[in-house]
Structures are given as structure tokens and as C-alpha cells.
Image (cartoon, rainbow, N blue to C red):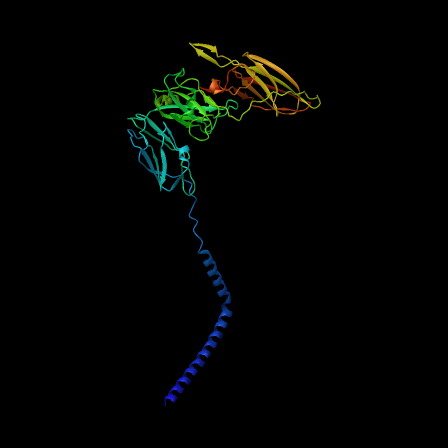
Length: 435
């Protein structure tokens, strides 16, 4: 009987398998028929799913690029503080930042004590000095390019942090300009340094010329046009002023360094802000003449005139000016005039030169046999009357001589005569731009 039951179950199982096979065949037929009718829809849906799958892993673009510099949120010594006795100062920013050579870029006037350290912890910048600061002194921190943000490198520029160890901030100010005397253009990024002296207007015999080898009491840098400004100075002190190229940013010359030094012969007291506001923005001081060390004076050529068929002629009319005049006790006086040298400069050097020491005089020169080309008229204010352009020497008290140029170039062509006129100022226009 057990065999009969078991045989019955086997037949039932085989019957079920056959029925399943029949249903599977039907399903395949139905699927084939449906797919043939809807194949385009299936392909389109598959393509959409594929495209979406490729797009999903892409990272977001993060929005527009950050172009803003870091922002100071907190400071242990607020800007403009008085009666400061701290041995350190900290600034907290709104983002992570990096330091860029703080020993060179972060400057203090007066200088911070020797051994001052700079460090960065997270979003906080710290400067610490081992010794007390000077009493009753206003300190000015200029940051230069010290701080920039971590990701985009945006520099925090123009920061000037001011505080006083006394009861008030000093209010004196000095403004001026550093000028290249051979080009008449402002000198960019020159170090301008102030050194306290005892006497005013007539120099100070106590101050030695070697002061430029020590850190200055106050220092700043010229802007792109050569202008400089000192603020928060003591008004009861006169200062000697020096300017020089300072590649390492330590506001002094290294022993043996031969960089030219510009200077003003007198010492100067700062002016208080109310005086400045009543007169308007002016250059308070005469320009400091600072020559580029790489510049070389032009040489006078030994040349032979070209033949008439291949050369040109220049007819030059020039005048040694008469003004300006100076009012003294209600009367007008002619200011002292410097002799000058007028030069015709070509591509390879000086082709001709003339000298004048007589103001209000007129001259006409005719020069033949000139090679065709472009020429420039230039004039040298010859302070020492030695007939040449001198670079000056700080160590012997000789300022560099100045040179000016005519506005228009002269084009010399073969078989042509060119006429030009130039009236030269009586006095050195670079020095007399002080007003």
C-alpha cells in the first residue's frame, strides 16, 4: 500500500511539472508578443535610466568662487586702543588662513622688541614679544601680504592696526613722494624710513649717515606712484628721512650693501591732521630723489656726419626759461638758476649737446648729416657744473642730478629738414613740483 501511495505522489509531481512547463511556454510567447509591440518604449526607458545613472555620481559645483579676503572677527587689542601693556596680540578670522613670511611682511612702527614671534593656530593669528613696549608710544602694525585665506589665496590687504601704550594716540602725519631723478617717475615699493633727531630744519649732527644700517623707528613703503604716508607720529619730534630699495623688507641696509640712498637734507616735524584738512591734500615735503641702481648715463658718441643724400637736418630752437619767481618781503625775485646741458639722443647714444647757464636766453642750432631715425631731446640740470649727468653719492652728501625730456620725439628722414622748439624751465621741475 505504501508503494501505491508513493506512486500516486510521483505521478502528481510529474503532472505539476508538465503544467509548469506549459505555463512557462505561454509566458515566453506572451512576453515575445508584448516586447515586439513595445520594444521602442523599452529602449527609450532603458536609455533614460542609463543617463540618470551616469549623472547622479557628479559632485556639486559648490557655487561661485570665493574672491573675498578673510575678515577679522575678534582682536585681543582693539584697533585704536590706549594704555596697552600686553606682551602679545591675537586676531581671529572668519575662515582658516595661512601666513606668508610675517618677519618680512608684518611691520611695526616703532619696531617690536627683538625676539618677537608669529604663529597661527586654526583661525587665530598671534604676535608675541618678549619685552615691554616703549612707554607713551603709538604703535602702527602694517600687515602687507601676511594673511591670505587657505583655499583661494585671497590676501587681506590694507590692514593698519593702531594702539598706544600711553593715554592717547599720536596725531602727526608726514606725506611725500620718492622720484627717480633720471625719469621723473615715482619709485614703487621703496622703503621710506624716519629717524628721530634733536634739531629741526638744519639737520642734526648727532645723527650719523650709518643710521640706514639699523632698523628705523618708523618705516613704510611707497605705492605704485611713489607716494608715501606716515600717520600717528609724535608732533614734538623732528625726523631725518631716508629712502632706499629694500628687497628683504627689514627696513635697513645690510653692511656692504651698495643700494642707492635717497634723502632730504633737512629734518622735518610732522603736521597735525587739522592743518592737513584745512589746506587739502598736498605733498608736504620736497621729493626724495632715488636712482635705480641699474641705470647708466648715456654716452656722447664720436660719429661722422652722413652724406647729404642719405641723411637729414635738424633745426633746433631752444630757450633757457626765466621763471618762476619767488616773493620775498613783497618783492619778486628770480630764484637761483642751475646750468643745464641739452642733449640730442639717438638709438645708440648722444649725437650732440649744448650748455647754457644764462636764464632768459634763446638759442638756435642747425645739425646736418644726421642718420635717419627717431631722436629725443633731454636736458640735465648740472648742479656741480661738471658737464655730465651724475648719479650722486649719499655718503658724500651729493644728491643725484635730474634729467627731463621733451614731450615730442623727432623723426629724422633722408633729404628732409626738421624744425623743433623747446622752452626749458629755469629751475629743476622735479624739485620745484613741491608746493
